View 1 (tube, helix red, strand yellow):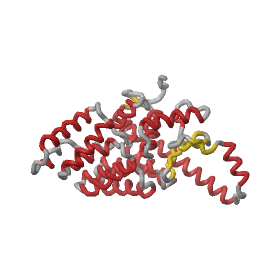
View 2 (cartoon, helix red, strand yellow):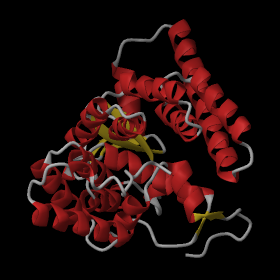
View 3 (cartoon, helix red, strand yellow):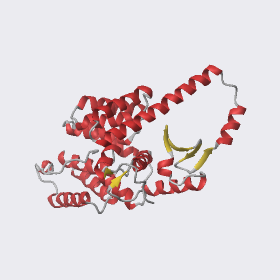
View 4 (cartoon, rainbow, N blue to C red):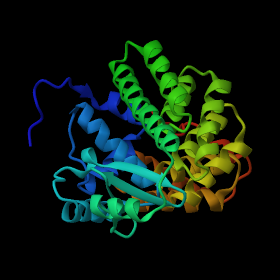
Length: 317
């Protein structure tokens, strides 16, 4: 399906940076046919990548994501493009998708409620005080406004020339909805690239306070600590990301490099192998194979643990 010519086109690198997705992760999704390979993208494509990222961070691998998207189309009438039409909700240990008031549990494919079921529940419940209804309505409006500011911030950041305005828009989204994790993480990433470590760290930590099992938050914080030379905390957060999402390719790659630098050869080997199971064909896979061959050939050579710093960890670009 061709995209409308009226939409502004963005480069692959711009979209990867704004969506906080690595080139390797995008290639994995492309091979799984979750998103088509292209050189130019629109805002709709950005929405697709954000949805895929949320599903991945909730622990769903490419195969299960594909199954979930198929179930959404089958069970929710009127959905033709699930990646752009659904809203992903992370609720405690579960991930739900929401379309026009209908909610589905992503892990099981179970339709949790539709409009009629919601209405029945309302009629059977105790009456809600008018003031409480008004407060709930105001809260919903604030969250909707926050989402609009977040979307505007994404567009401004994607332009590449309005970073100050993008930062202000993210801050407005957080002011309206302090639990807007996407805005917190993206602000952290902006400050990360500006090498304002303390500010970036603060935003990443706020996101993790809201959602302790947010894999991308742990990964970005690990990258930050790695850049600052705090290898202990870097290791801690890379492993935290992998506890949440065991098939997080970028985390395996960076953790393999970190283990090599600290002389943990067997752990490095294990993470290189895990990475290659997830990505066997990219240029990064070629690097992984070379590093793995070096470890196999060298066994344990004194001083060798620091010999592989020539390859930098992958960060959210």
